[in-house]
Every structure is written in C-alpha cells, then in structure tokens.
Length: 145
Image (tube, rainbow, N blue to C red; front, side):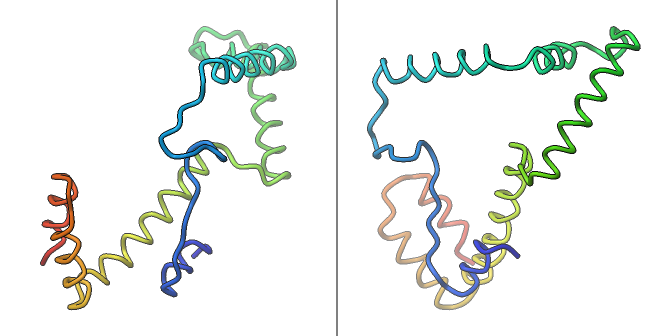
C-alpha cells in the first residue's frame, strides 16, 4: 500500500490538493490570467521539436494509412519516449490516474468496514441529521445498514 492508504488505515487525517495550487476556494482566474495561460501553452507547443510534432501528427492517423517509414519512425519515437519515462521515473497522466483510483478504492474498502461497525453507523446517522443537500442525504441513507 502507498502512504495515503497507510495514513488512512492508521486513522490519521489525510488532505490532498486538487485543482490549481495557490488558488482560493470560489475565486476564479481573471480573463487576463486565462489568456496568459493559453499563450504560454501555445509558446510551449511552438518550442516543441519537429520530431515530436511529426509523431503527434502520425499518431492521429490510422495505421493502415501510414507508410513503412512513417510507422517505423513512430514506433522508434514511442519506444524512446517510453524508455525515457521508465528511466527518469516520470509517470504519464493515465498512470497517475490509475494510482489515484487505487488509493480511492483502498480508502473506500477501509471506510466501508468502518461504516459497518456500530460506531460507524452512529456517525453516519449523525451526519445524515446534519446533511443539507439531497445528494448527501441519499448517499448517507444508502450507507445505513
């Protein structure tokens, strides 16, 4: 298990950042800030190497529409990227999401055991009494055994 699930199993509180770091709750970025972010993304794309741009273009095509040389170039590029990712320890977005899902499932498994206990049921009932949203009430109602 990773540290997040371990912290939950030991009963320690765990807080995870989601969203834009440094951003306050309910505060939106200004139009100028959003525009600057898009401009930076475009500048980064312009600085991308020609090989990277070509590989992205070739990935958008179906394999049957690629020539042997294009397919060979694309395979070599993907192999190099995977080797680099493996050696540097960098994770793809999908790998990061998989870890988040595994952690969430581990937390759910632990919390479902806690909820089934007598004290857990009492806590759910107290939360249900204080719940203000209909969705929250529905979820808590389903948790009561």
